[in-house]
Image 1 (cartoon, rainbow, N blue to C red):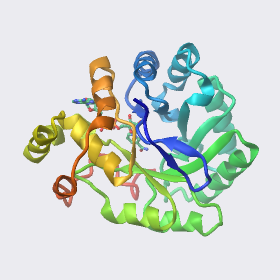
Image 2 (tube, rainbow, N blue to C red):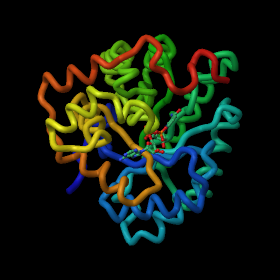
Image 3 (cartoon, helix red, strand yellow):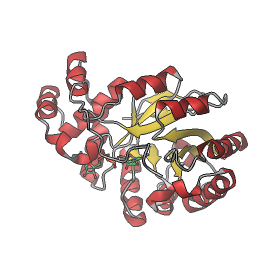
Image 4 (cartoon, rainbow, N blue to C red):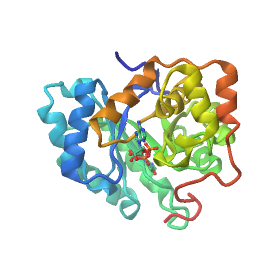
Length: 274
Ligand code: NAD
């Protein structure tokens, strides 16, 4: 099967189901990305901060799949924020990836206390204009900071945010959508924790004849999120790809969204991360 594609506000398209690589060293990233490409995934999410861009690049180079068929995202790390620093960091990411362009380059965190995200954004706009980053976007941006960038006339193509049924981000998803910014959901499986044994998830999984992970991923796909679940296990990499065949009805989608918790966040708070 192939993933559906979503059209970005710059008219580029992105495969809706991709593959994540956080907390995986370069050698393991190489193996798991190779397994993902073999399975059919054509969208890989990495970051300078993950320390595995070289492994991701090797897997792509050795896959036999042409570079043009693979959507590659990487991200600007916090300590490289600022106009000149961002341009230099981007060059290093390309070098490690062994490619002459990325499909999507993101500001990893806004780091509001640093106050450099506007300068970083100018660098990303320049990279996009040069064609070396085909699309540009942000990650972990709350609505007011996103709005600031939109107001420059150069709207981010995506906002990649923590999002899963325990933290469904209903307001920020709507804020993204109202500005034409696509929502990408990170930690879509809730990092493989409690969520996958939640009684509501397992019950809907049984109804749908799917696994809990497939059920959660099918929820993301149905509500329009772009996702890139991470696994280093070939069986799970294939299982997660099987989410493409799982259909949930409105009532099941609402039950999953209803799992949202006041404090469902697993990762850092964007207001605090610097
Ligand atoms: P995830 O929600 O994708 O969960 C991954 C974990 O779930 C795995 O380590 C494994 O333990 C488990 N798992 C995977 N498939 C499973 C299956 N079929 N059955 C049972 N358990 C399974 O978590 P994640 O890695 O944090 O998020 C996905 C990707 O999002 C990352 O790899 C990374 O690319 C991106 N990300 C971005 C940011 C950001 O700040 N922009 C932050 C975190 C993650």
